[in-house]
Amino acid sequence: MPAADVAAEAAALAGRLAAGPTLAYAAAKRALATAWALPLADVLAAEQEDQQRLGLTGDHRDAVAAFLGKQRPVFRGR
Image (cartoon, rainbow, N blue to C red; front, side, top):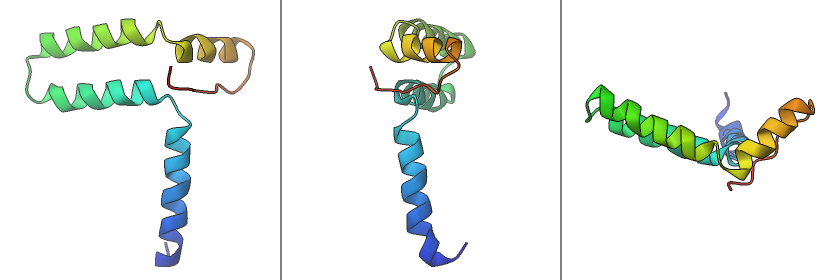
């Protein structure tokens, strides 16, 4: 990729990530960060807690409704 295109590509990627499921991204990042230091049972327990919490968010509700309606989900970080 030409150097002149890097900034535009980075901005496009940042936009796609920002429009995605940011709460889930944060949970995945936390899980990866702690997986190196904790026993597997603790990592899995933390992931279970995150999944339960994320399943109660407006983003999850909206994403399920979008899926069922064959629409593209809109994530709001809530």
